[in-house]
Image 1 (tube, rainbow, N blue to C red):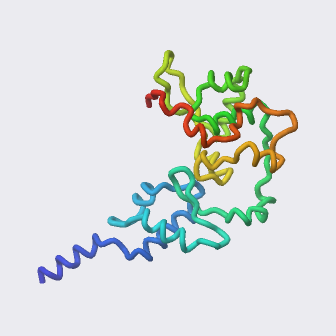
Image 2: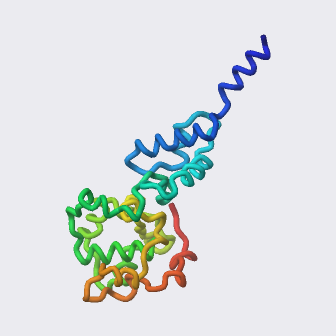
Image 3: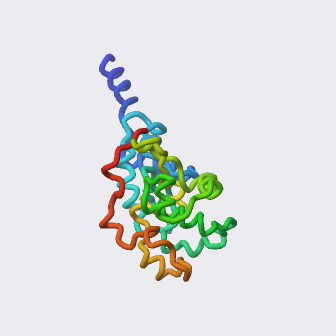
Length: 215
């Protein structure tokens, strides 16, 4: 009798089979409008589950399908396969146009993050208006980063998970280079400052890697 009770109690804390864990992760991602982190998945799933392993299996199962399990920053989401994006064009109409100043500011932050306002202005060669930064913050495409341990401890800016999600990127390192942007016709004939979009980012992995920051 005692053995039966012990086995029953242990079964309550046993993790579900991996196939069932995959189904749980799939259900959570399908129902979530925003990307979900592994930590959030673990918090929703039964004790003992391994959402990270379930994601590995689930991602393989979705390979070649119309939707894919995509990593966005440090979170995961179900998104339309990149080669089928044209089918969604009618549902993704751009309702707000960014000014040239906003585009340049966003590009500098994306390619040089974490970057301060002063560094943005140095790269652009002109001052950055508060309205430009406020617009990008309101769109949730940039956010405040860590403060630099320099005089005045200026705040830095970085791109958000929303920015990565909007452009289908896993991280900012997946941003296209200058040549790709020109080939795609995404740059105007009037050139941007040369330092805005580095043409070879592999040689400058982290412009500020050696600098000190505080949370």
